[in-house]
Image (cartoon, helix red, strand yellow):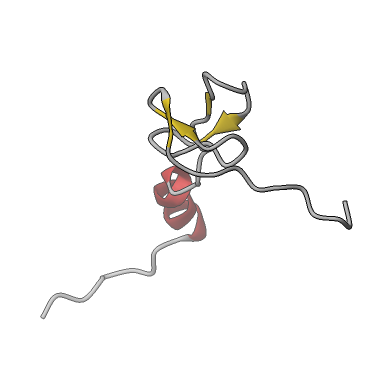
Length: 64
């Protein structure tokens, strides 16, 4: 079984992990209301997806 000959240094480990960071999510504007949403998902504000209503928008509650 293979065993490392030397301890891997912190610099070597951290430079290898430099590409593991999580990037920003891609956001697209809703064509109906203009709010930003995740791509390929119905808009949570107006309920539109691909030029049609697929979800009923949430009604504002009495506490708001």
